[in-house]
Image 1 (tube, rainbow, N blue to C red):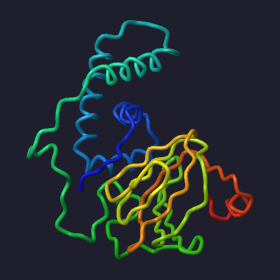
Image 2 (image 1 turned 90 degrees about the vertical axis):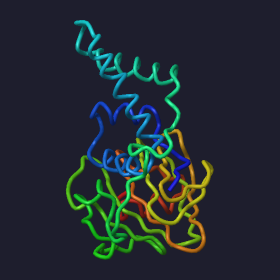
Image 3 (image 1 turned 60 degrees about the vertical axis):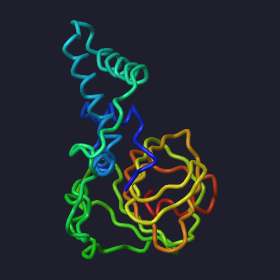
Image 4 (image 1 turned 120 degrees about the vertical axis):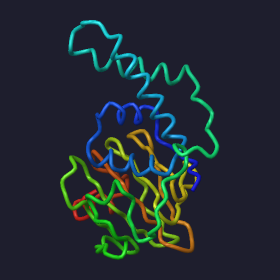
Length: 225
């Protein structure tokens, strides 16, 4: 698995600082399990964060966290990460000997077995499972039939979507297994799933989606997204 779409630097900073809701963190951790590039970026962010915390001086509490976050992002932009190490244990994608196992970060919310999942019909060609325990956001598994066009939508806040199986295309490109869609309120898109097999992904949203179409807005309360 060689992901081409990654976590945003700001998301990695929030992850390193422990400043994410449980659902968003679970999706980010699922991507980190299979992406050596993002694991290296995360380690880099953690080193910068540790350095900044060790150097901080007494200041007003209200602006300290925002200042540290801005400094960390500036250092990430200014300093290129180390090149990937080939064949290193830390950079190898997480492997499992049982193809029925869900990714480790998702098991507390959906169970451990793909076969045991109980999908709920949501719309024609769309099935969904909600997290079995509260996460502070909307954490879901989605299974979308091949060749299905989803409604055009934007986002009321942050959304992280990790592709687990299958693929889709939208204005941002092609997203296949291992790819991460790290989205915010500035992105409007219409995912279209690829032919062949269903697209299965895990998504966490900290605010409802925004639909320009009247029909999608009408059924949104029933879907709960």
